[in-house]
Length: 340
Image (tube, rainbow, N blue to C red; front, side, top):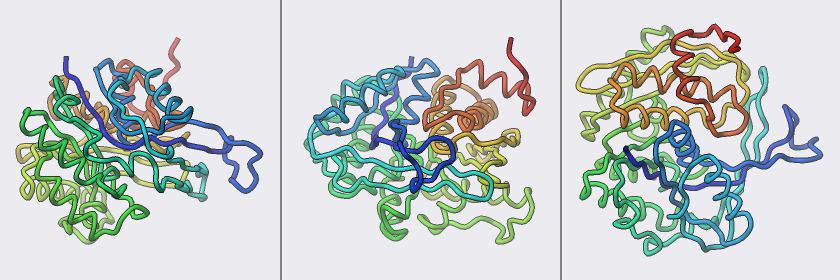
């Protein structure tokens, strides 16, 4: 069976009940999440072995974060401990015309201050077949870019498949800084997740059409971007989600996978959102699971898109949908039958 290693930051998430704003909330709910951690939970939930690697403070919050991952089947024995603090973020859930709002408090987190010497990648990656990281991790500052590069070099030496979700965050770094770093790191990437906006902002890659007024143009732009990324960096597979925001409560959702000169599109979904955060990470996790399981390109993109669709109906960042849940959605589409 394949073993996946994911690397990045996990944080404590704090949010009010329901749709309350932070200004009015008398209490906050605690959960734990991060791009690569979210993907790891999805992969573990589908029954595949997965390790999450990070640096956590050696205190009760660091312990709690690791406990939460272990609860969902993610292996945490390669986590490094030390440093001053666990990053946190605050979430106000969006509804109707009011958007989701996220406030970060992650400066000087343990992982952002990590050293290259903290991670023995030869040992960490022993026996692994996949490695996953996002563009958030090198954006954290300090030695994180070099730590990522160290891991990627070992992956190439060990012939480990590398998956990267570009996941550009303007609150962490500039487009110019992201472009310089990700251009270098993408040389090591086999499977790249990127949407049209990220391709333009980070890599200077534009779609075929300036006008995105039609669904046909949106899909063709997605394909065009994927083809350019594959040609420029040698990525074997490029995948993307296409989101239509009808409101903060209702979205349209589909996916595309590009490989060997062909683009494969998923079914289109329309759903009411319970919690939007983690939707892209669940797509990444399901994509890795599908590819590692030997699914063909069409089945892969259908599974990854359906899985991430279901994540939007689950509270907090983790996708807890089973393989059976995902396959039932693929079979039944948007119908939402009662299961008895």
